[in-house]
Length: 122
Image (cartoon, rainbow, N blue to C red; front, side, top):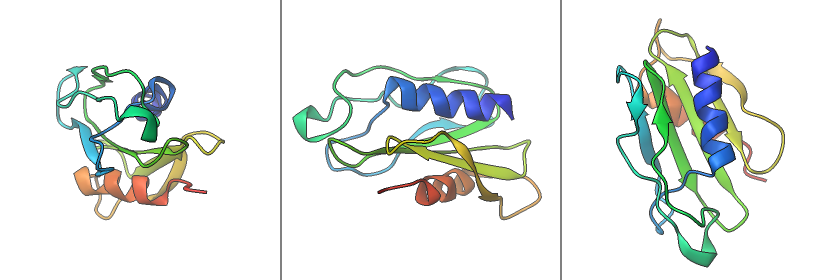
């Protein structure tokens, strides 16, 4: 559970981003072993939140997705394939928090997408 929150907070704190078309990007796709993300967060220019590209780090068993939606809004969603809850957070304030239950007994990658959808956008 701590790994999900840590991974999500790291993504928010480091301001992970996606392509300039504001599509969702998958950074960690469990059951990865801990290490570099499967995607590099790239700069979206002045129209998007991320200003400097970087490669996020993933904790084992974590699904992590992010969406760079505007110069003021970045959202993340996360889940663990060993957990039963999904998490979401955004640059709109507050913190990464539990936003719901996973659809099955254990979480899958689409549960991270659900966390992203539930993250504050305004």
